[in-house]
Every structure is written in C-alpha cells, then in structure tokens.
Length: 405
Image (cartoon, rainbow, N blue to C red; front, side, top):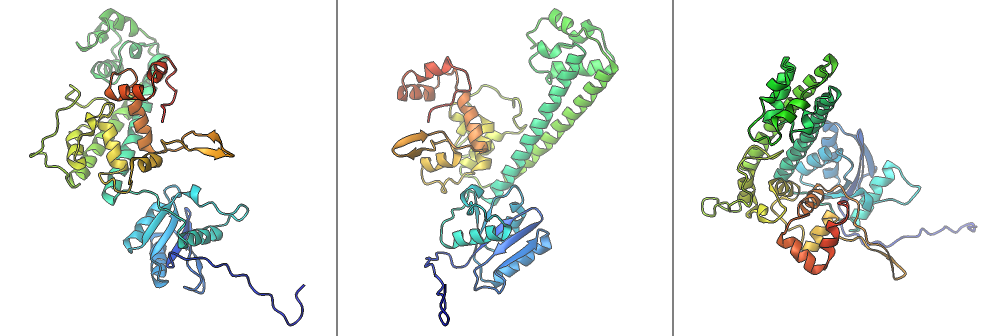
C-alpha cells in the first residue's frame, strides 16, 4: 500500500536502441497496423486499409515520422504489395519469418504484434529473409506460375487416362506417353469416330517399341458417349494448358534476355552438353534455356552430375547469380534447411533432423540427388568414400530413405 503524499516510481528498463528510426507493420488481407516510436506521433499505432491509395498514405505518414527502416512479417502474399509500395519510397524493409517473431503467449492482437515487431527491430534482434533482386523476382514469379500450369496440365492427362480406363481402352498401359505423337493421333482418331483397332494401331510411330498386335488388343473397348465426352474435354483442357505454357516460355525468355551477362558467349562459347539429347524433353522450355543460363550465371551448372536445365533454372529464379548474401556454404545450406537442426539438452542430443521447409530450391536439389540413385557418378563415389558401405545399403533400401548430411 502506497502511503499518502508519496508516489510510486515507475520502473524504467534501460534498453540500448540500435535502430532509432524503426517501425513495425502487422500485415493482413484487408488492413495493416503500423507502429512507430512513441515520440514520433501522438498516435504511435495507426491502422490503414490495404487499398493502394491507403498504402501511399501510410508511406507518407512514415516519412513524416522520420522512419528509415521497417520490419514486417512475410504473411502469405499479402505483404507483396505493401513491400513494393514502401520500397518505392526508399525505406529499408526487413522481411522477417513469422516463426522468429512470436510474441508473448496470451497477448495476440494486431496492435501488440506491430508494436512487438517495432521493438525487436529497434533493438537489433531481427534479421531479414533473403530476397533476390527485383529482376530475379520477376523471373521467379513466372517460373512458379509455369510450374502451376504444368501441374494443371498433368491433372488433365490423368483425366484422359481415367476416361480411357472407363472405356476399357488400355492404350496408356501399352505406350509410355499418351501425350506423344502416337497417343495424340490415336485419341484424336477415337474422338473423330474411328473404332477399328487395326486402323487405330496403324497410327503408331515407328519409334514405339510395343508390337502392333498388342496395341490393337488395347484399343478394343466400350466406347460410351459419356466417357467420350469426358475424354474430349480433358484433351481440350490439356492442349489449352500446353498453349499457356508455351506463352509463358516466351515471356520468361524475354525476361532472361534483359538480364546482365557474366560471360560473353562469343568469346567463351557454351560448353558441350553432357546429354546427347538435342530437343527439349518433357516439360523443358521450348527455347535454348541452357545457353541463357550459362550467359547469366557465368558457368554451366548442367556439367554437374544430376543437375539438368530445369534444376539450374530453379537455382537462378530462387537465388540469382549473386551469392554474396551467403558468406559460406554452411550459410547457404542453412537457408535451404538441408543441414541438421540439432536439439541438445543436458548434453543429450534429442533430435538432429532437418527443419521442415517448403523451399523450392531445396526440393529441386533433393530430386537431383535422387537422379544419382543408380549412377556411377563421381559424386556418388565421393559419398561412398566418406561413408563406406552407405551407398550400397541405400540401394537396397526403399527410395524414401533420406540422404545423409
């Protein structure tokens, strides 16, 4: 109990402020909350809507408060327009992982979140996430969009196979690729009204290894109207997505042409390819992507065993040619979440599993490592020398076994 005539003194925490002109933003889908130091405005926390006009008002208010650096969470895709508009005003924006800025339990509000971000940033406890240059981000957006188009087109291939199975047409079990020359020619003929197995089998390309009699047997089915209609629409959707992918390839090529060169292809020509294939295979772009990547990166990554042109393209889109943000290979592996996440207490190792991550480059590199499964690559031989007997044991185990770190 405080005695009359005496006032209780406030407890002042002495905090060393590293970034005095710091602000924090809590980003939402329809509104954002911004916190600035208490001495910059009578209302140190303000709410703005996410319309473009309101975001410009928020940027001007931050300028009037003398703010130089801003911290915000990477919340879905809602942070992107906020980031781009504030970046055009010259602010130093620190994009942080939401996992690293958790507030005190039981105090979860938008106001407290932005104040907590502002406080952590002002005392230098936040480190920004890696974000490549804007021109690389543009290529990354197009590549991710293309990846979605490829997945959607693959879904319609499955719809075609389902319709054929319902008609008991076993063509997709006889030839390896139903979307190849032979598969498309036969499917088009079926939709045009052809039902004779001999006539349909005569459309096979000379490179098909399956015997003509086997193809004829696979083309005897129950051609019901409802399944033919499903097959027709699935085929139309697949071809529509292939046209969209082709248009996306041309757009990506134009963006790659605008990127700076690290090597002159005329003075230092592109090294000869490790593969004998001349035409793009599978889902590879329909232009000379390998030469473009060599010009931009300054080296041909496809010379590394297991790295194809798609893997190198993902590396360029996710990281870019400038690796200066990663001082060492250990830092790069940590960003990829491919290094052990050791949890030790009382001198006992509780876990050393890698962190869960949706890093696209890490997923692509894992697939590249799987490509070395049964190869006699020098990389596999080096791994076998570092861990004797491990490669032999791995080849005898199921394919979901993880690679050692």
